[in-house]
Amino acid sequence: MALFHHAKPSHAMVIRPVYEHNLEKEFAIIRKVAASYRCVAIDTEFPGLVYRTASHPRFLSPEQRYALVKANVDSLKLIQLGLTLSNMDSGDAITWEFNFRGFNPEIDAQDPESVEFLESNGIDFSKNYTQGVDVERFAELFWSSGLLTKFNRTWITFHGTYDLAFLIKMLSHDGLPDTMQKFLYRVTCYFGFDVFDVKHLSKSCNGLYGSLENVAKILGINRIAGQAHQAGSDSLLISDVYKKMQKIFFKNGIEWRHTSILCGIQEL
Image (cartoon, rainbow, N blue to C red; front, top):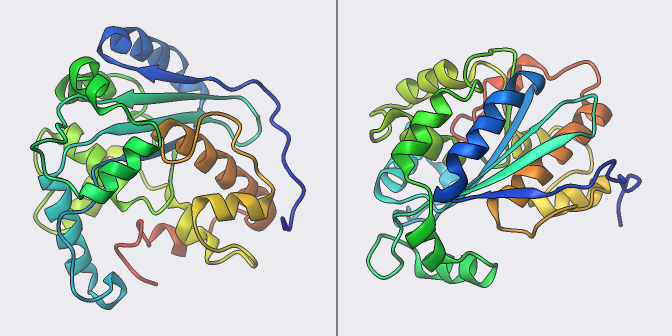
């Protein structure tokens, strides 16, 4: 049962799918509207994890957790990236779902169960492989999109270490930095200081816990477009959850201590 009233969407939401044929057109739209939005929510879909540890990540040091993230991200190819632009004081939002080419489920590194799960949730690997976006071209257009030039912008994730790591990997045209501190420095250089993980923020909110779907359900937020486990729809839901949490639990702003915890790599 939801603890809060269900939020009614104030607008019809359409997720804009992006493939190679419309990449330039969609980035032209992003460049046109970027200055009008202060919140950017992102989500990614990738082929699972190929490196794990015997112990739970909570028992690892921050440096060890980062090394695990780096090993996986450097070895894997991104499948989707969802991007939602919004503002705190408005129900207006625009969502894109970028579908990347390059991942071949027949030969590329993957967790087979994760790939099967994504396919069962609507990911078309064949279409992505033949019609998807080139990662390098995406990075070039993202750099000139206007999203990385304003440090008063807020970036939002949910359990988002891997989301930021994959985006940084693409933008830098290279593997992730060797150390956690270099990675955190790069996050700040690219995205500024307001980078929040809704999963972490929920730990400070009485009654909120669990997955993105569960937190949204408790807050009374409905998924208004797309389906779960697709990056565009998830980024939109992350955006809606963050804004509802801000209004209910962080009316006076988010304390500095939350910005010091970047997506589960560092602990309080």
